[in-house]
Length: 474
Image (tube, rainbow, N blue to C red):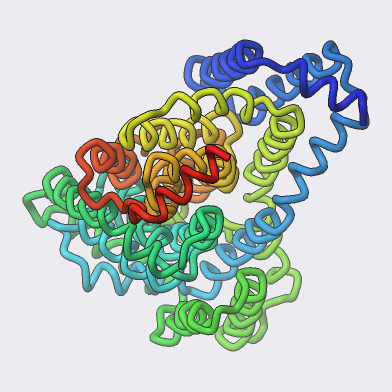
């Protein structure tokens, strides 16, 4: 214990900043310049951090404790990703995703396809409360439609992800939204209501941008659509009851069934549908859909490329990245690197605008350095809560900023858990769809503007502010 206390005291602001800067350079150069998968640069950073900790006299037990404490928080998300892999494989095999594509081609305007994608994902995402679920189910179907129409894959992916994030952010069923409210000690529904000051403008601006950029101005591509429809109808079971697993997601969300139970139930129902549609399907094939995903063999190269995906093995890259980033986060927290870098900044902030800007940048920084969505809410929330109150800002102002600068940004980080998941699921590199994730890009900007203009900024009543000042002074 004495050794750990001494090591913590020896960390100063300059040392923490240098460590973070070196980490950022390694991650940025590895992923952006050399085009490496995030796992290797993150592993190099972990090795560097372990070496640094040992040079400072930390024990192997301290290092192991940091890794374990970090990974422990990710066990449930890892299991969820494994189930999502199984869900994708079985949904394609049962004709659910192909049925959504067929229905979508008959319902969605080709000319306004991109804004339609954004709206659909936003509306359904608000009902379900899980961006990951939207991206990995409805998102795949919409992405396939976009590919058939000859749309820019990065633009389609950006619209899907933006809509899914909007839904996740505004839903009372969302884990990240509940976390932000809990960290700031807010009422959940007051928090969601207050989110609208930046969320609605970000939504409307994004919708306009998708309408302008995604307007094809023509109904070209109908021949390719008809070809795709014929291939889907000939090779998959396209039926009305494909809506059953989708409806099940809504029902479970309304009943607040946990994600793991929801996904297990959905995979089970989907497997049952496969046996009903094709009673002679070997059990070994079902296991193959779950473990290795579905392999499309329609003879149409475009359709086969779109619908050959899913399976537990497809998620192993994301799972390995989660394990590594959580390990990195655990070590950084164990040795107070991020906390030490943030603490002096919090004491120097004098205006609401500067407090909000610093909190936003801290959330972005945690996403960049750690790649973990929840920590981007927890660490800035704990570091700046007192500062918000001292500057006369209500806890609702803090919780909104934590969402605007934390949860929505993780999807833009190549080594971030959410960013890697979206890239792996849709098959589009994070840096490719990043410029088109308008909702994520706009949210922190609008939050900072709110901080400096005071528009929609919740402040403490004068009596409560005075009370807080007395406590701080004491």
